[in-house]
Length: 359
Ligand code: NAD
Image (cartoon, rainbow, N blue to C red):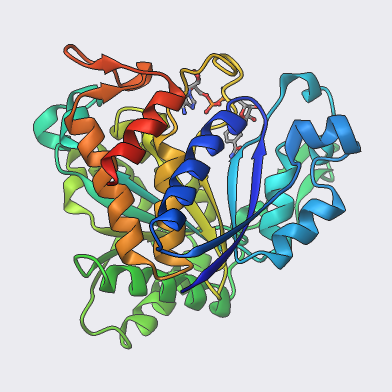
């Protein structure tokens, strides 16, 4: 039986409430004999600043490095908004990404039939949507040099950022996207801006080269402006979208609103050995923290991504996903996904409902 060595960083705001529910699901699977489970807990974000004066204490980082995977709640605390960026709670995520080389961000967007009316788009455009964005996470204009605000010869201030990608960076993220496409509907759209940017021409050429090793996956290319439009017009045309850091940042937020509630969307950030940090896409939601109304499903679905991606435990992951479908089908809903006829429940009751549906 596999032994899962997990680091759990629940963080701030609703983080502890939603991770508690995800842990219940993990423990249930362990008790059903799916795997052995070892959980180690660490402080991150605002809660770490309060106790250790830093958002990512050394012992937390060590736990992350020593674990097989990380379950992450959320960070963010208004009390620390006055601090410089590097000292704020959110710096913990950037630190973990850098230290663990988490270069691939995976964001699935699935519209469950019961929630199709919660989207801002019409039901027939959105019902049945099932796509995944593979976003490069550690390169691009966010990290390229030179950068900064400088003065030009006229004494005017000029802002500079540089879009940079090396072939090896493109190859490794492209391989992840092709591998994922291979396990899905085998359709990959690579999104770039090759008509204007040389970096993106290299992106397109390199992805095309990588595709030769994946003849079973059909590859097409799309400019990012068109992709943004197509996602709003006909999102169901997509299966896997591969893109760079800045375009992925924008497109993945566009996709997240298609699905209705931010409380339903899991994500993973992984490295070459498929070790990763698994977290809901939402933040610490201080406005609802401590009131047992947060939707834990995004975090529970992040656990299913972890089991599938890092541990190849497809049966366990399927069990979680089917349980979530069952719960939604039974009209059990936290306030964010409540509709007429729903049975409104709180965070912990939603966790319990998923456990019950797993039997
Ligand atoms: P947010 O995602 O925390 O909340 C946005 C809105 O969605 C709020 O109205 C919130 O109540 C609601 N919401 C979020 N998660 C929900 C859930 N599970 N169930 C029901 N409703 C939910 O974004 P924000 O308010 O812009 O940011 C709050 C804090 O979180 C900030 O400090 C921000 O920097 C941080 N943040 C952290 C992460 C992360 O940890 N990965 C991501 C985004 C924002």
